[in-house]
Length: 234
View: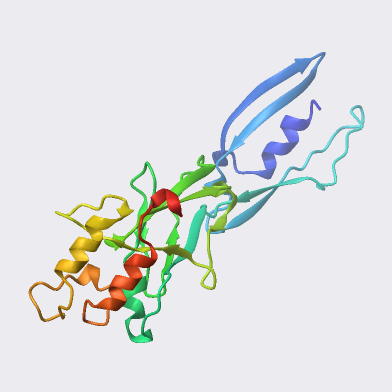
């Protein structure tokens, strides 16, 4: 092993190496620890393979065939998925309904919004984060929390287009605040706007759940479907 330090360093430009230290030295057999900057080694590539080439002199009789390698992945961890609803609506208003859900990594400032298909993707995940909880919300909907494990393993899909993470409609904003439940207070708010159209002053966009331009019995039925539930009910 004495030739290890002599032979490994020529494989890399020394500027890549951020540190070398002896971690063990027993009777002249030395083990070294090398630290390399993976961004320098794999610049411009999503994935790089780092090979260690070791040679030896006749005295040491040590050989290496490069059969062992370390795979370095520069691709950032990412969480993706789809958000959906549990009621019917016209295809013409799908973008209005599925877009605009806020998906946030709880306890951080990391967040994004769903697109016209309900799809979301969060890519700024810290490297040391192993698990997290997603907080999914939108005005008029009951907030949902989704636990995600294995965050640092690449692309983690929490749901699909065919099996989205469903949020329930009915948690109305009262004085700009949602109380995290679908209850009598929400039904009262819906009753106040009942039988109004989008051109009316009393019309509340967030309470027109199916976005047909009128608050009517369909919206009442949508709310009652999820009545007496809270975020913990998911």
